[in-house]
Image (cartoon, rainbow, N blue to C red; front, side):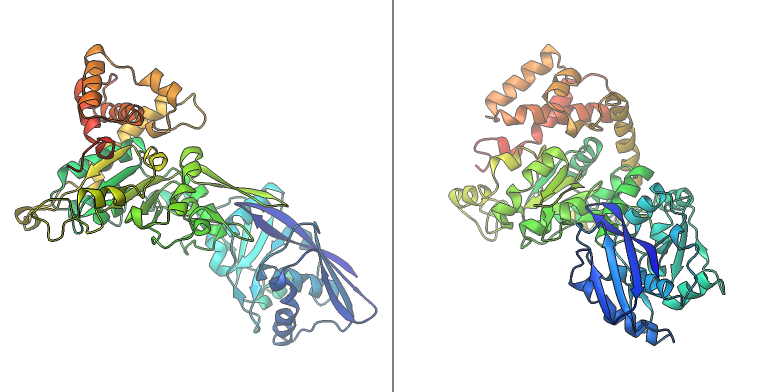
Length: 511
């Protein structure tokens, strides 16, 4: 008897429906075709043990299973349940009249229990698009898939629940999640708060500007000055994710199996990879492409601590994603795109010893050593970082002060208001949502300067020896500062403040 059951394969962050055709005929043998990888090929052993331990059996006949389309590689153990149900239906051990309405996925344990799968959300989205009514999957993935409305999500713990469901003995309960209610309930609880940071008012101001305009930022300062502490609190002042952003972010994390039991992701991601990370782990790729850290940071923050310690090749592969806000990974048979629109926050010591070149430092480095250390970061990468700020250690009287600083909630209100101004400004541009994304054309349109502001900028660039690449960055940052004050025009004080945030562009700043 021939039976068709349906599973799904995930490529990039999109899913494709896989038709599993099971034919049982006279003879002996088990033949699995359709480009399965090793994990799929080994499924026969897991299926055989799982069925035997639940008083069912693998038929002693000739079993031919085709996974179509046959030219797409099938990966992972998530097809175990699909194949098992197909075999049971084809051998008349379960009823198969309504099996066409189901997408079925799950990895089997030898006792018939089900292990969680990767990519449940993209699979559920594709199932809904293609008109399937039901999706059977492991219970641990049910909340994640239930984000998709108008699709019955049937979470199960073992294969017997699936068998009883199709035989009509006991139907599986549908998992439902009120996505909007859940989303807005969790939205206002940041884990870290700027109120915990003592002193550093100028750096907090910098962080506020960076968050308001989506600007990349680099913090330069000695050990213990608070660079990491400040960076970890940046997501708490970013505007709350929209439902669309939350879905997009959850989709990427679903592909790598990193979605928690809450289902939808409510907080913006914060990724902080170690400096020994490889190129592939950072930008994505591999034999079977997976998203890297920059895609997992999509709609959130990527924090690179001790930037000069990262391999130069790793930092250079970030150039194109920083510009295009997506990563394209090409292979001979297919190409996948992963979104990577993130805010880059980098931190670094000013020298190998960790301290500025002054006599009060415990260890000092010569200007030549400091320059050599800083030159590990290429000009083109620095060109993509809008704000450079020096972080100095907090004095004792501020550390011991019992008073709390301004909370993240207060700062976030100002940031959100500034972002709303930018949303209106860029409503006619498809891929531009905030100031950091402006290109030369938009800068000339939205960053017009008065004669006074122009002269101020000219004098600053000549006196401070600012490089040419600083010009556009100063205009973008000054536009954001103006937005924070709800000003239509960029005023001289906005330009003055923006100029302060280009430390690494000043020739001789080490002196």
